[in-house]
Image (cartoon, rainbow, N blue to C red; front, side, top):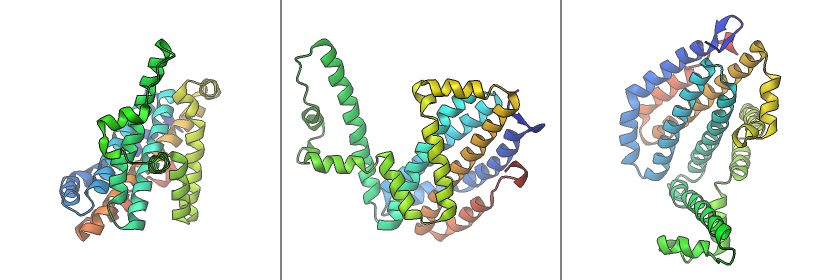
Length: 269
């Protein structure tokens, strides 16, 4: 089995702490979902909850792939986890700033719109491949299905969709945090996000990195770093969801504090 570093199975040590976090979630997450669904911020709450669950699936898969010594697949999933992390942080921070449900409502309306328009653009591309005279109206096609958006101007819809663009998300988080520790962590994951693009898109940099990490000890050091960061991001996503719930009911404060104290052993860091 892969994933050994300095004569220890580091992933098992990370998993042991992660299991304690899982136990906290088991005790409280079902009740937390009910509390949020009945709140005055249901859309924002729903987004935070679903991103918590989705990021946890990715984190678990990363741990499993570390054990299998699969650096390439870990790199692909790690980049996806960064995207989930940044999006969830952005949603929470916008809520913290505005104290209403508008960012959650926008997320489900306009982030969804951006994905739908991207899909329709791919249909237009296919049409053009077979009929270059075909004049496919993307916005008209979308509004025929979603007529509630037909009065939006091009500038308005671009502004609404672009708020969920990753460059805009990073910029907002950076300006909102104003904290050296947060800024350093953000710099670290942004650099990782950029570096790992090649793994997702099949570029040559990814294969060069694989060759440069051919040595077992060197490769395991890379896996260890990504496993630790995956643990930290997934944990922070949970923390922000519980901090959101704490605004609704103070009983979630004790669970939030327990999450804060669930740290990796210093020997791993």
